[in-house]
Image 1 (cartoon, rainbow, N blue to C red):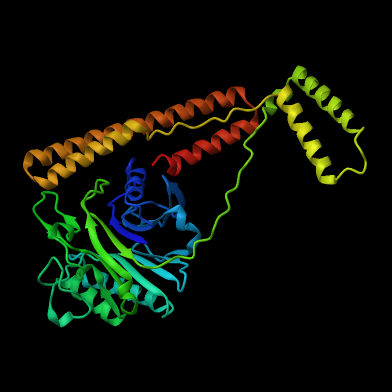
Image 2: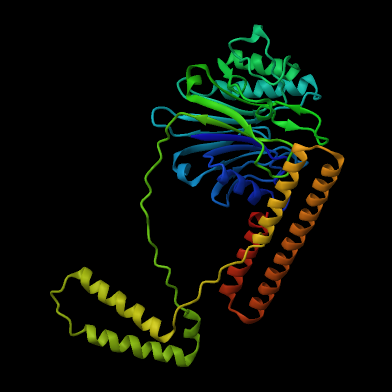
Length: 412
């Protein structure tokens, strides 16, 4: 199982949700805890090939956490709780014990001691509510530099990017010690470029401030933790992935086939078509009256159903399914790839010319996405106006509901 953690900065931008879902599918992740959602409400939405569980941020549209869950393990999700705009967790049904993945966004280093104390106190209260025998993992943007001090062994390892811990790092180690956790993100030997999780806008400063923690009794279940700089959603944080050796109790969902035939019932409003349907159905039911009375009831029902469908298909025909064309099209995907290439070029050579090129590409893409989204909404509104003038009340209500859904999250 692959579990990821990512500070996306904001999912409020037009392209953010679909762009991140695309990256997570590319890395074949099962669960990803994200921070910086910045939405004003909580719920669940389909994002690409993943299900996204999200909580609301604060009143200033800041913070907010969420979980991307791949459809292959959605049946293992028992519960998702959003405790605050900085703290949430998901409980997964495991084969031998449940797996609790906690997603938190700690106050930054410059925040007051009172804010830090309040946050860690709330986190400990939530942690104390969990059963002792369940596996507990913390995916955390601690804004904490964890060093290699021998006094903190064996809670931390000797593979941290930093030599000394800062104030948030000490608080993190104290929390891990009190809850019997280990900081697994400091225990795997990797090159430094695979350790730092944040890079400054000028490309000169790199820090390892995102960490993965797990119960000490389950620590051998984590096989590796490292960051991947190829994933990009226009943030200065990098995607961190932990490989976990545990099996989920995923239910086997039977493949269901649905009959997607829909008849054009609007034609029945026309006298000519209505009369033709009445003649068709009368003739076919007249033939059924001569059937054997001892015939099986299931067979009789199949004959009735078949006659009704055949009569409707010949007289009124099938209603064509109308597929909504999303505003996030192939051209938008090409722009995302252009951003990724510009960012990789900047990472490899953080010169001023590459910084300017990256910023210019970002501005151009944001402008293109905003224009695409506005054009999409404008076309949907014009389509609704035409529907109101020419269609029935039921059709108008359906079109307005579709538009309202599209303007909430589907277009983000």
